[in-house]
Image (cartoon, rainbow, N blue to C red; front, side):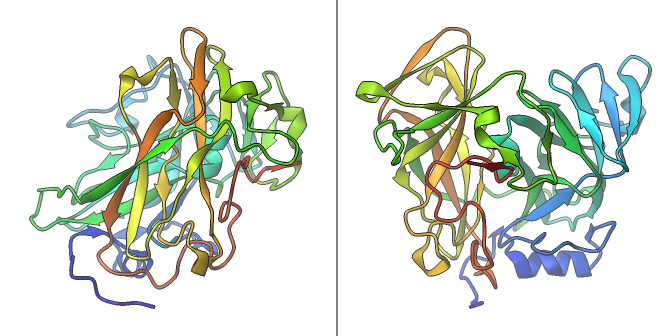
Length: 350
């Protein structure tokens, strides 16, 4: 399937991520897991310990992450080796197993995995001397850390669990990053396409049980989620409640492109989407078993109740070129989210 693209700048596909690993530019810290290298991204894994923090932070220029963990910020250290509960309302920092030694023309960006967003677990990757979340400048060399803040469900985490993923981009000039967005697709809410049971979405139940990140399909969905209907194509979002909804539009990611979910504008209403946003090449394509795939949207109400209407635009997909076609497409080896409609995290069984 591999073919050369006329666009040498852009997102690196799986085979080039493998080359970064082989060349020592990405240190895994442990043998790679099956499917850890995705068609256009790499899953990052939790390390052996977590730090309970008083607050989120950015180290800023000239400071490492560990230099910031003084008595004003660090509350205590947690051993994850036997599994540990990360509780709602708390902020944790976990060193990741992977480290970077990026070439001067390669930058990276991170994002929550789909399952992470659908659990309402807020995550952001930070690095030494970092002045932004999620962004790794071209040529960055050093460790990676993930900030974890469960919002709705407390989670049981262990070393090796993967909550975030990373993408790599090639730039033409050293130190100068290249905007590779080629087009955008509006994403709107579907409040009319109910399933056979009349369900158009789910609202998270507060004070539910623990979610074990390693227990796939091991949690009864209705113990954690309330099914929703939308009479007359309208749904009122309650403040600070978390919802899983689906897009009205089908999404297809071409074999030589990747996409990322992004907000349209802050003034669209009293809600926000979580945007666990990487879409890999092959998502939604019939040749990879994904015909008709929808985007699943993680939505949280803000300060006042807000009425969503069917077809209301809430986000957009930004498409970027890959440097070449990946040697495997999303969903070819099976995926919980290929060919999805309205679908909860893989941890839940209806």
